[in-house]
Length: 198
Image (cartoon, helix red, strand yellow):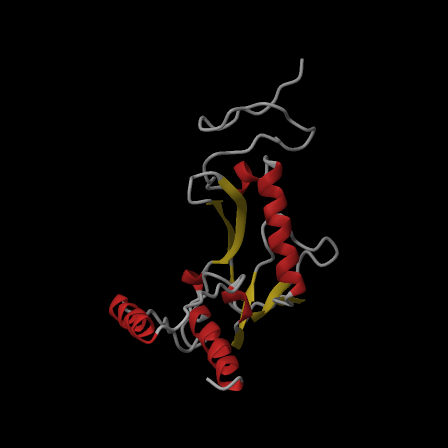
């Protein structure tokens, strides 16, 4: 007799591989332990790690007692189509920014949020002049911001380098959860827009 772990109540249990359940969960999971049991969530985490590595988000350095090392955790989201069908499973590696120390890990915070009134005004002007309107979505936008400060993060849970497992990540680019991430992304975007004539 083979014992298999019991699935969460919101999932219909069907087929299992020797290592991961192939059933598609219908709700987001909260813990790495639960998510790691499902092939779709494991693949989503692998995709995120590959994107972070290809983006040169961090380099591994030796840890030292004098540096503040922040943690990280996984966040899971099911992206859905307008009719409710599942589009894809997305996993984000998020830095635990609440443990950052002002003046050490960050100097300034900034979050640019457009007011709904401004959006309505721009749409009204565009309609009045018959302008075309385009929407832009930047894939993993916050991961493109360049950090000015030295920020160190523990290696991602269960994705630590097997050779340098005692090392920490010296972040070069921003991650979701860092206090300076919105500012770093804004600086990168505005620099690009100015360079092409805006």
